[in-house]
Each structure stands twice: as C-alpha cells, then as structure tokens.
Image (cartoon, rainbow over all chains, first blue to last red; front, side):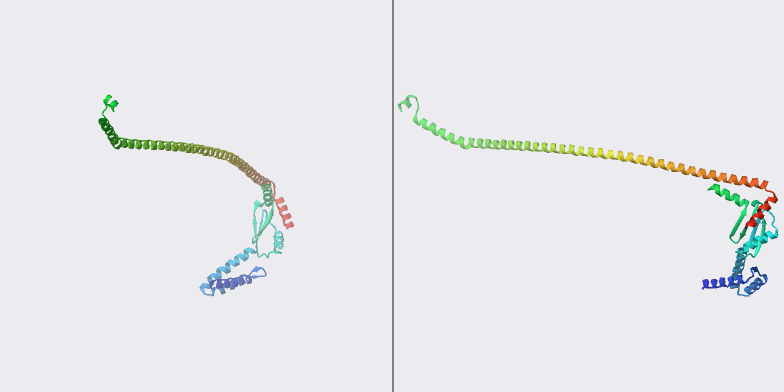
Length: 133
Length: 163
C-alpha cells in the first residue's frame, strides 16, 4: 500500500514540476501556487510531497542550467551564441558565467551531466593523456 | 666197565654228576640265562632304538639344515631383490628430484623474468606519467606567462566560433 501511495505521489509531483515551467522558463507564480496547494494537504502528505517537489525542481533546474567557464570575460553576443547552440539540443533555463584563468584560453560549458570543453588547458590534458599511453 | 674202573670212574657217580650237571644246566637256564638274555635283548632294543633315533635326528638335522640353507638362499634372494628395488626407487627419486628442481628453477627464472618485465613496464609507465605531468606543467607555466589577454580572447573567440 505504501509503495503504491508513494508511486502515485511521485507521479503527481512529476506532473507538477512539468507545469512549473512555461516556455522553458521557471514560472515563480506557478511555483508559489503549487507550493500553496501542497501545503493544504494533510501533514503526512504535505511534507513528503513538498520535499519531492523541491528536490525535483532543483534537479530539473540543474539539468537545464548552463555553466560557461572562460579565462576572459565574454561579451553578451558571445554568451548568446553559446546559449543558442546549446539550446538546440538541451533547453537552457538558466546561465552562469564563471571566469576561470586556469583554462588559459577557450571555454568549458556544463549543462546537467554533459560537459564540453575546448580550452588550452584541455588540450594540454589531452597531450598528457597521449604521453601516458 | 673195567676201563672205567681202571680210570677210577664210578658209573653211579658219573650218572649223579650228569644229573647234577643237567639240574644245574636247567637251573642256570631257567634262572640266569633267561633274565640275562632278556636284559641283553632289552639293551639291544634300546641300542637299536637309540641308533634309529640318532639316525632320525640326523635326518631331521639334515632336513633342518637343508631348510635353513633354503631359507637363507630365499632370504638372500629377497634381500637382493629389496636392495635392487630400493636402489631403483632411490634412483627414480633422485631423477625425479633433479627434474623437479630443474622445473622449479625454470619456473623461478620465468617468474623472475616476468617480474622484471612487469617492473620495467611499471617503471616505464611511471616515467611516462612523470614526463607527461612535467610536460603539462611546463606547458601550462609557459603559456600562462606568454599568453596575453588579447591572444586569450582571440583563442576563446575562435573556440566559440567552432562550437
């Protein structure tokens, strides 16, 4: 019984997470509405469902959060170009820019579990791996 | 009769002496010869039995001696056989021990060779890794010092363009 109840709850929460995003953007108004409605449930249901919802929301945001690392400050056009390219395969909800001088030149982008790197540091690492072999 | 008288032989006395002689003969035969003969016979029997026993003992002795000889021969043969077998077994053991020792030695040598090979490969790998790290660190250091901001921007721009 408990397993069925949890499974049902998870399914509902998944749907709620899905509707929290409108056109690929997190809708704060919708999130507030969902949280308020979940709060109205009994304590036994409200706490686990809220926990599941927030965890799922974070996971979903992390999946679509683009992190760009470069050794130099990028122009907005350059950032837009990167976002545009990534957006073609994975929807980008949020973008973070990190200046990382250890990359020397080039950039590294991370979205969810995916990582793409084209930097001098990466080339050096590749060379190191080649020598290892 | 006159002749007898002339010789002083009295017939009555002669007859009495003959009778006496016969009586004595009878008594002697009855009471002396018979027991003596009996004793003699007994002694003869005993001697004969003793001789027979002695002969038998001699035969037995001879037989025992023959058996002893046979047993000794058999024991000698057995011991010879055992010695031969022991010699053969010891030779076999020595040969096997030699073979095993040779095998073990070859095995140890092979293990040593393998160990040396692995050690060499490990060392080469370690050298490669150290060299790779050294190259990477040197490159990083050189590039960090030599790359100016304009070059960094240029490379980054090119990388973005390639994306």
